[in-house]
Each structure stands twice: as structure tokens, then as C-alpha cells.
Length: 133
Ligand SMILES: [Cu+2]
Image (cartoon, rainbow, N blue to C red; front, side, top):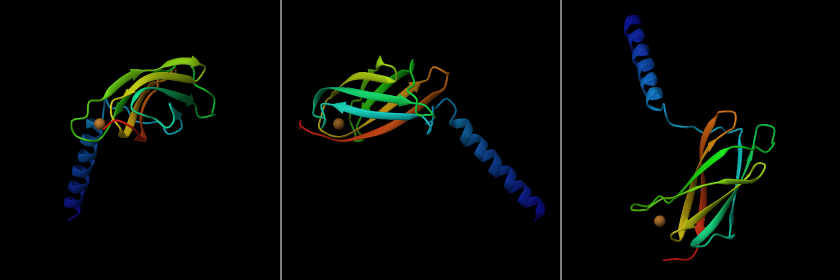
């Protein structure tokens, strides 16, 4: 009985290791990094828009010199995602053009490479883009 339990623990550990291993290469979020997203026009409508992102560190200080890649997407089948890159307009403030190709509930995936070498990925919901079909 004791031996079986040891085996079970070993199998569980291996399972966890395999699951963790599969996650390698994927970027995870860093909760302590603040990403504030606003959209112009506000409220967002179908057509060209500007995403404004504010990046702050653990102390709430703006993070300058980050590289931000954006993907705008929706969760329905057949959706074609739109991609954009943000440019820093002032320290910690980044702007990216993005075209909302249809109305509805969007989300934006922000992939950030921080100047200290860390990387994070975060999904931010952008519901209720109006207009279109
Ligand atoms: Cu769509």
C-alpha cells in the first residue's frame, strides 16, 4: 500500500512536470506590471482607431523603452485578427493604430517586452465596439 502511494505521487509529479514543460515558450502575465488601455474614439466604433497604453512597473512608475505588439481579435469563428505595434509617444505612454473591422466584443492581446528583459502577455477585453453589421 505504501509502495503504491509512492508510485502515485511519482506519476502525479511526472504529470505536473509534463504540463509545465508544455507551457514552455508561452509568455505568461506579470500581475505587478500595470497596463492601462484606452481607445480613441471612445466609445470605440468600427473603423480606424488609436489604442493608448500606459505601462507602469511595480512601484507605479512609467516603464519607458518597452516593445509592445498588439493583436486585436474576437472570439467568434472565422474572425481575422488585426495586428499592430505600439510606439512610445512619451515615457511609459504608447500608441498603436488598430482597425476595428467589425462591431461587437473585441479583446486585445498585449505582448510586451520590457527593457529589463522580462516579457509578458495580457488579454484586455474591449467589449461593445459599435457600428458595422
Ligand atoms: Cu469579428
